Image 1: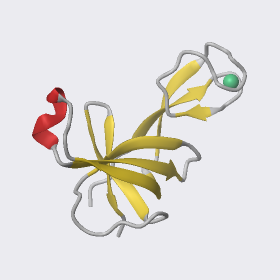
Image 2 (image 1 turned 90 degrees about the vertical axis):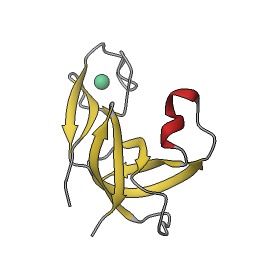
Image 3 (image 1 turned 135 degrees about the vertical axis):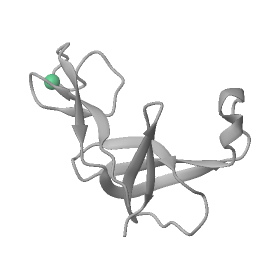
Image 4 (image 1 turned 60 degrees about the vertical axis):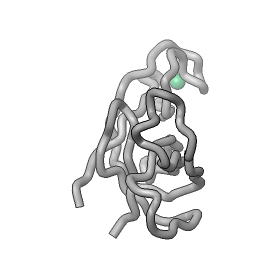
Amino acid sequence: MPEARVQILRCGRCGTLDAGPRLLCPKCHAAAMEPREVDGAGKLLSWTIIRRAPARLRALQPYAVCVVDLDAGVRVTGRLQSIEGSFTPGARVRCVARESDVAIFTAEG
Ligand SMILES: [Zn+2]
């Protein structure tokens, strides 16, 4: 299975990780958020299937938007690679691709 890393932000002053985008650190308010790539493994927290997408994403519908708690310690949003199969909250997932800055996740293993 291909692996992809997830791009997040890390505060250069206090080290806080954040999914972004944002200019200021949510913890220390420094304008020091720097892009950082982290491992794409984590736990699926929640997801929802989008059956009527906005115009620019219509070709993708139906698709699933998901929230993942990465093992790296940050919560990110992304898309599930496929809406087929059964997912359960807490399931292990991994980022396998990035499309236009969107992390694409699939079940691990
Ligand atoms: Zn900070």
